[in-house]
Length: 399
Picture 1 (cartoon, one colour):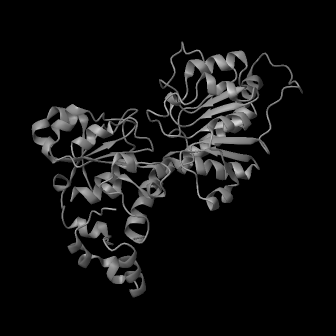
Picture 2 (cartoon, rainbow, N blue to C red):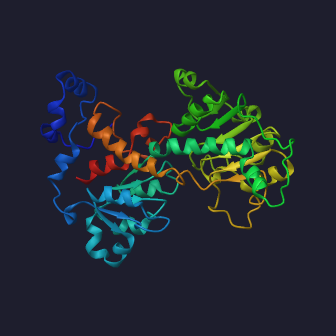
Picture 3 (cartoon, helix red, strand yellow):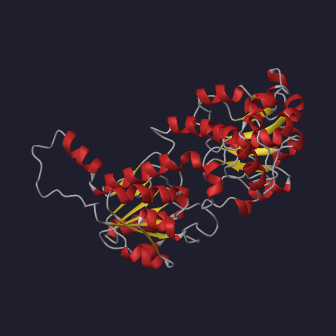
């Protein structure tokens, strides 16, 4: 795996000098090219003022695509942040200074025009797990690196997946609406939900998020099946009690709950359509926490209307949010969330930044940095990506 720091920095590493001799030897033997250094102290000598810091292009600081205030403060310690508005008003002066693009909520859009206008661009760093909003081939053809933050969203997404599963099974939203309705005079003892304990959960996509879902489902004593392009290690399966299904059809037929936690690629677009829905149990619930286009939405509406499956709980749709005319919106057996980056994800976002810096500065013998990563490297099953954050590559490529 390529590394990003010049060997001469090794002599400046305060951390390496202070490490016990055994740890120094282990570091150099396990990762001979990896340079352990106190990144902040070394780099701080290279940039004394805001204008001297590497320029980073961001969408802005306000609105649905603006990066949160705490994140802005953290970034401004190390980078000169330039908003799209500022850039468009003064391209000639600012373009040569921009070394990175920070993509937040899919913005700014990194297209051919933007790439051509940024001669010094080294990296596009996208907050989140998915990369389907980026044209990786186009970016690579410009000699620009790409980084994402899958580990940052794994836990909140898995949490939300279980929340949707439980809410759909126990009809939480329907029950709330019934309880607060002025027309409700009494509750029927025959108004039932579906049991979760002991039920079978089929997870499609057993990467970081899928595995965390399995960990949570095990606590509910669920039987866990999973389908993935690459089977997990036996010890990993055993730790969560998961059974591998080589055929997706088998998982669909045997599961009481089917949860999509797979990345969107040309191969997975429309992964669940009319045929796949017909294989599921009439009592089954489909939960999608991946991407909206993984599911044929028209086929899903039809399946819910005709009783092919019992319910659907969606963290994502196509488009987002759904228009008022969308056929799935009025269906009572449909539950729709607002995304894993919604309520409760604020702490996770900040922890991702802190954890990343901790891994780089204090755990030099940990996973290698994915420097020089190509499209093929962005496999969400890779444990290397669990510790992969845009800050790492910012530091690596900008100096």
